Length: 276
Image (cartoon, rainbow, N blue to C red):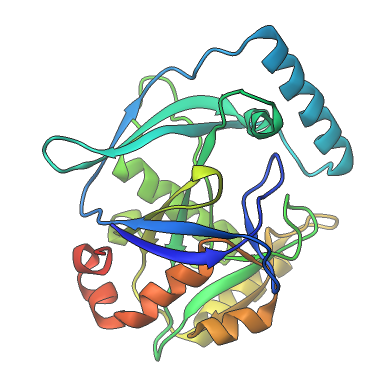
């Protein structure tokens, strides 16, 4: 495991951490060696009546402030640990977005989000990043294409194959390129603000002009009044370029740092690229 320290303040009750230009607090973003990842479903911790009431009140307040918030199904990480065989095991419970309001309820369970991303390189160097639109929970924030993981349909497993499929859908919906899910390689697992767990896949490089064309076509295909999730994309190759863009999600700068430190290993050997 590698720990990369980056400054960012605590996030909101319902959102993840941001990395502004002038930090007030230093926290750690951890990266785990993850050539394999096992996912195990568990029950969510029980809530007392007072905890549930507090959660509902905070969610109602946040939803009134930001109508983009949606109390849809998601999963929460309850543990991320090594098994006796050395495998990385993520224990997860089905919840909904409003459970993240528990982060502001005293003595209550503090759920950690689970999300997937796709590192989409471009030929010649650099990764695709996108700025979230006004219709999202974090307008103006830059991130890697991806999204929160939802519970699988009844009777279906949540495993790496289903996470790859979800990641491929997120890339297509947010940027435009349609890639085969089985071509995505597990590249890294991170843990950052609120203990949020990111499962990061890497795709094969694409020409920059093709990626930008896909995104333009995606934007033009949206109906009137429909906002994209990522209103703008850019290609970044360094933390300096990233910093110039403005506010970013907490894991983005250290993830880019790892990528640029070993780009050949990242593209050719995901097991090596995810190492600490």
